[in-house]
Length: 495
Ligand code: SIN
Image 1 (cartoon, rainbow, N blue to C red):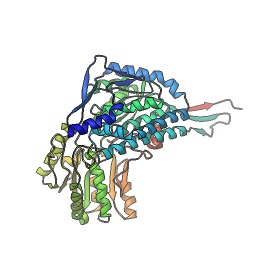
Image 2: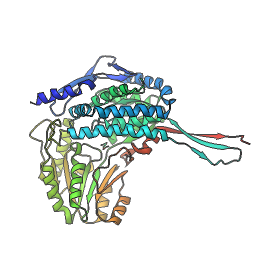
Image 3: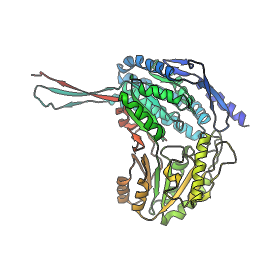
Image 4: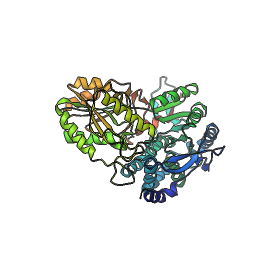
């Protein structure tokens, strides 16, 4: 039965399945012919193998992007918008096939994969339009015979390195603003999920994207440092956009320094999710459920520390555990499933370590707490109470379906706990008090604040963090600026 479902799924995504890299409009092998397997985390089955590329292939892709740059950059924003919009429209026409491929290589439930395809297409659509509004400025001059004009231009060849948790959306969140601005790009998708990025190339080609404008190179975990080194040290590359861990982000930032590349880094988070006594309990539980268990807890903006005020604590825990207990675990291709597998054994080991550390130090599971009987990397939806802010699960991203709940007494205490982390990506809180909603929002140290909502992702708003959660913003009009260089012209002799 499981095999039948996998074969049926493969028939759906087969037209978009590619097993080679995409450079200069051509499907290419690694120079030495080496390959690695991409597996379905729900079954452990190999889907297909793709090339193990390295520095040489990366250099070739950068050269292709450099050659394609003048033609693409010097076209109009309107012409580029037509291609990007067609790309988005074709993605939505093929939503089911792309979502099926995404679920197969990443594991998330089909409903979430469909939503991710729409989210990914939305960046293309949004930046297609926003590229037309890369306005400059005319500044009143400092001398009567001068004129001062500011223009914005494409920064040049860009590199993107994307994670496995959103294999489509993180690609277009980088490629769409780059391409809309007139840049070209070389992208390295995560080794766990290269197939969605390659499927995007199939569709980009069909949409009329010229060769060399968007290139994808594949490599496994061992190849990543070589590819990353080339992307960050090659002087032709003028900008790097990366989503991933803070540890790797710091390394890439250091590697970009000698050639002074522009960088935007969307790194780790440790989001607090605060529920005040005056919150709407139903809304807070629904928000926590979504924010914590979406993508099996594997998002950078997932609620990592759930802080609940003492007066509402027991009722919140009871309802959250009841709701999380209803979530069906399994293969994301099954429409009834809402919790898929973790991406790989290392992820499972981390979740187990966090749960064990919490229980050893006095936390108590009110739901789950163990590997799921399905085996592989499946983990039970879990709710723990009595979690202390010093426990491992409050200091590191758990990236799993585990809600650790800490009780607090006062607003000041909640804010102090929430901010006691080197990270500052997202923070959430629930309250019905208008003054508190401003006060707490002002004091929380994060780039993104969700107030009475557990879902903040949209192409129209700036996504990104402060502190060690990163630099720069993706999405929104701010996301376009990351790919534009400012040029100021001082025109003299205007008598
Ligand atoms: C992420 O986890 O990095 C992205 C999540 C999102 O955009 O919703």
